Structures are given as structure tokens and as C-alpha cells.
Amino acid sequence: MGILYEKRRRVAYITINRPEARNAIDFETAHELSNAWKAFRDDDDLWISVITGAGDKSFSAGADLKSFIPMLTGTSQNQEQVGEGGFGEITRGFECWKPMIAAVNGHCLAGGFEIMLACDLRIASENAVFGQTEVRWGIIPGAGGTQRLPRAVPLAKAMEIVLLAEPITAEEAYRIGLINKVVPQSELMNEVERWVATLLERGPLALRAAKQAMLQGLSMPLDEGMKLEQHLFTSLLGTEDAREGPLAFAQKRKPNFQGK
Image (cartoon, rainbow, N blue to C red):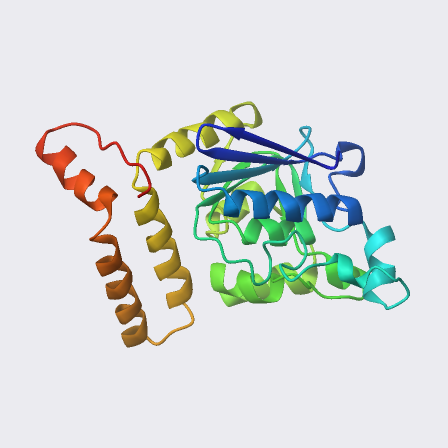
């Protein structure tokens, strides 16, 4: 299987499982990955997702060019296999307000880099390297790299990463704000689990509303974004979770959120 999908507690764990190919994504794997993301999005019992790569060398090297380039150049009959969600499913038009974590355990290149960019929180091991290398091969990033990256880091750094197509280290990625944290490889999943545990203590509906407000607000004028924030804030007030939170605070205990 190109994708491993596991549910534990309220968390979906998605693993790109082609270590022999640096976890590059071919058509079959892309289809499995699309199904995994949709399953996470549509499962009300799941509140958080974690995506990583199998092994200790690669998160994902991106598209398996042998299978994708013929499709992109119109010489394949498989154009329909890239769905509306774009490469990796979450890179274009995929609406899911649940938090998504990328656990970057090695090479994170091209389409793999773009999948990482589409995640909300990004934790990397010290051996990880990051790059948008498409221009080396006469193409450009086609799954959000030219759009999300300049929104995530200063424009000059985005230009450098895309135009020079030279990978950067995990330390540099952290320095420019591309990722949230760098840890030793042996500690990567332990650190991810600490973040997951913290998120699971937060109100799941509040997490989704906050994510929606921030991401949708990026494309709005400030006054429109403020209206969106107020709408989402008001919509939460009638939920059981919004009643549980203040009650738990008054009773000096941890809230028991149910996502309702």
C-alpha cells in the first residue's frame, strides 16, 4: 500500500509508504492519499491529522515524475486521476477546518513540499531538507508552491527557494518561519504527540473556527475579516463546548469537550 491510514483516539495518522522511492507519489498512491484525506475530513470522530513519510530519509520527494509528467503534458489518459483537491488532495480546493500536522522526517521536495505547505502545523527533524525544485526540470510548482510559499515566508526568500531550486536545511526553514519546530530525528514523533495531546485538550469546534477565520481572512480586507471572525465567534456561543469551557474554568478542572 502506498498510503497507511490509522485512527487512534481522535487522530488520523497518514503515512506515505514508498520509502524505496523516497516516498514519491505515483498515481495509485495519489488516489489512496486522496481517499485518506477525505476519510479524515468526513469522520466526525476525528479531530486532528498527522501526515508523515515512511522510513527516516524522506517525508516525500513529490510526484513520481515517471507517472505524472506524461499526464501533465497531455500524453497520458490519466488526467482525471488528479482530483479537484489537486496533487495530494489537500493542495487545491480542499476545505477542511480540522488542524493538520506535517511531521517532516527527511527530504521534503517539490510536491511533498507543497503538501507540507497545505498543513497548518509543521514539525521537522534535524535531517529534513526543504525545496521547490521544479524549475530544474523546466516546469513550475503546480500544487500551490508559488501561492502559499510567498504567504508563508518573506517574498525574497520565496523567490530564492523557487527560482534557485536549491533545498534549504531544517534550521533555515525554521529561521524564516516556514516550519514551527526542529527536533532530533529520534524525537520527531514524540514531539508531534506532545502537540497532538495539547490540541486534543482544546475545543475542537473552536480550533476549526479559528483556523477558518485565519485562512479565509487572508484573502479579505480587514473589515471583512473582522466580520467573518465575529460571525464564527457568535456561531460558537450556542454550542455545548462553549458552555463546557467556562463551566470547567469556574470548577477549576480541565474541560471535557465533545465537539458539539
